[in-house]
Structure formats: structure tokens, C-alpha cells
Length: 230
Ligand SMILES: NC(=O)c1ccc[n+]([C@@H]2O[C@H](COP(=O)([O-])OP(=O)(O)OC[C@H]3O[C@@H](n4cnc5c(N)ncnc54)[C@H](OP(=O)(O)O)[C@@H]3O)[C@@H](O)[C@H]2O)c1
Image (cartoon, rainbow, N blue to C red; front, side):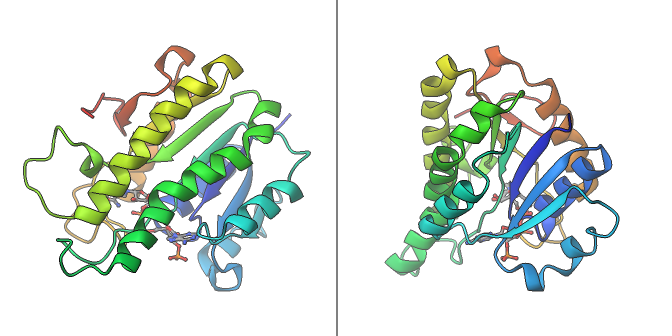
């Protein structure tokens, strides 16, 4: 039977490239994006891949997360990739209004937690039982030598804390959690100066994902499979 992956933020950047990779490798892909009617590059894959399903999901919308999980409740999900993320506008926090900071928190931290909770029954039906949280090296407290980017760093550090806890809580259920840094990648978020192409990052990440073992659950790894400091 085909394996199934759910990917959020699937319309561009790393999410789109991950969809392409898994479709090309024979997986069924449940691709979630804010506005399917505007997701041209994602929709363009549909004619070639009958196992691509596109669903509207703004991850800030908790009710929608649960409604989608309910729609898909009979489906086994092998892999859930919580990829949608935002950088947040400001480098510092003094010029970031509370609302903007909280929105970054909702997208980067709370939504992956809610998604994980909502899709737990699907993951339990799957074989691989793996949750991947797209984090960032910028969420590492120990490796922070340059400061700045407070909303992004804070929300990714909080994501790491939450996912580490889920990894422990879900170990008895046989569900693994991988906290993954894709590298600094040339996407809209990473910008043109990033050293890695999307293809280089995705090739590395899918290798790390497929090699990920039960014993590793809760690890914070980069796209080369190297352990990062918390
Ligand atoms: N690129 C890097 O160098 C880098 C480094 C470390 C970590 N990461 C992480 O990797 C992930 C993907 O990043 P990327 O580089 O591919 O970024 P990107 O090109 O900016 O794409 C971000 C994706 O997230 C989606 N998204 C944002 N807010 C959303 C919401 N409220 N609901 C649903 N989807 C939403 C975007 O959808 P819209 O088109 O609707 O906005 C888009 O699909 C993020 O979690 C990011 O933090 C990236």
C-alpha cells in the first residue's frame, strides 16, 4: 500500500519541494496550503499525480485543523511534516507589536502542537508513525552567538521544547518525533544569499527522515543528520 504524507505550507519553498519529492517517489501526498486557488505551482502537479490531494489550511485556524483531521479521520498517515512557518518582521522585539509576536508564536509553535494532536489518530493508523517539525538552527539557545531575530528564535526554541516533550509522551505509542533544521536555504524566507538550494536541502532532509530510528526520537538534527545543540 502507498505511504501517505501530510505537509503544511505546501504551496512554495521547502513544502512544495517536499511534495514533489514524495510524489515522485510514489507516496500519496496530502498537501495543505492557505489558499489552494492561489497555489499555482502545487496545483500544476495535480494532472501528473493522481495521489496528490490539496486542502485549504491556514494553520492559525484551530477549528480548521480539527475539521481537516475529521475529514481525513479514516486515513492512515505515515509521515506528518509540520512545515508552515513565518519569520516575523523585526530583528528586535521593541518594534514588534504584541499581536505580530503572538502571530509568529501561533504559526511556528502552537499550530505544530495542535496539528500533532489533531493528527494523532491518523499517525497511529500509519506504519512509519513519524512527526517532523520544521525547526531552525536559529531556535538553538546554545548556538546563539549573534542575538537578534527575537520572535523567530523564541518561537522555534519553544517549538523544540514542545516537540521534545511530545517525543517522550508518544514514545509508548510508537510515534517518533524529529525536530529538523533544513539548513539555510534559498527560499522566500531564506533569501538569495543562503548557501543551499532547495534541492540540496530536500535531498538531505528526506534521507534523514527515512533513516530516522525509534531510538532517535526527540532528536534535533540538521539536513545532514548532524545533532544540533539545544
Ligand atoms: N529557508 C530557510 O533557510 C529555513 C531555515 C530554517 C528553517 N526554515 C523553516 O522551514 C519551513 C519552510 O520554510 P521556507 O524556507 O520554505 O519558507 P517560505 O518559502 O517562506 O514558505 C513558508 C510556507 O509557510 C506557509 N505559511 C506561512 N504562514 C502560514 C499559515 N498561517 N498557514 C498555512 N501556511 C502558512 C507559507 O504559505 P503562504 O504562501 O500562504 O504564505 C509557505 O507555504 C519554515 O518552518 C521555516 O521556519 C527555513
